[in-house]
Amino acid sequence: MKVWDALVRVAHWTLAACVIGAWFTRDDIHEWLGYATLGVVALRVVWGFAGPRYARFAQFVRPLADTLAYARAAMAGRGARYLGHNPLGGWMIVSLLAMVALTAGSGWLSVSERYWGVAWLQEGHALLADALGALVLLHLAGVVHASVRHRENLAAAMITGAKTAPRPGDVWE
Amino acid sequence: MKFSFIAPVAVMLLIAASSARADGFATCDSGPKDKWQAQEKLSASLKEKGWQVRRIKEDGGCYEVYALDEKGKRVEVYFHPVTLAPVPKGAKNFRG
Image (tube, rainbow over all chains, first blue to last red; front, side, top):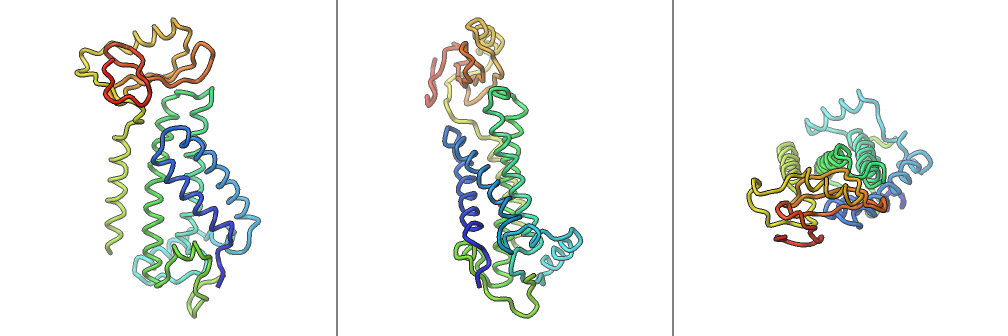
């Protein structure tokens, strides 16, 4: 059944392409990828309040206690299957969006006239980018883990938008 | 579990790789640092031209300068640390 709408999917892959592209470039292209990134994040945040059910932050951002309980269950290999994002995945999305915004924002500032050549901003931008890289690796690890655990290709689901209909014991609300 | 081991290792590799990376706009064949001229000298000569020097750092064996030029335009220029000659972007092992 359809879970991820078109905007969520396009935003996801556009963001992924922009971040990967920016990781490997240092010239004008890097700058433009940064601006594109900010645009996509802004759109996704609006969609997180105005979009359909499974795009909404309110649907997938769970309380800390629930998230820790899920993390313990997942580590023990008995985490429930979520039709939308699981609690760790939900917080990963919030973290990734925030880290992408901070990284791109610091890059934007560092090419402004006022902050041009300001060392702490340049070094800060690099550190934020490294932290973002680390988050991306954790994100990939989480996707692989949940895909194997529930025998469902989550990367493919982010392309087609479709996931297996909920079975007994799954969390769908 | 295998991936709980892979993730931290990958993170460490990533951090190690990224801290070593240069901007890569140019590299200078500049030899030992005791032959280099002081950054202050480069900075002073640029200020004399009317530049507002914001930052000088080493990159690829060159001095990399962030400044506003005499027209107030943002510029990022490389200089050879021995000769203080400007290095064109894209130059590899520039001798000055």
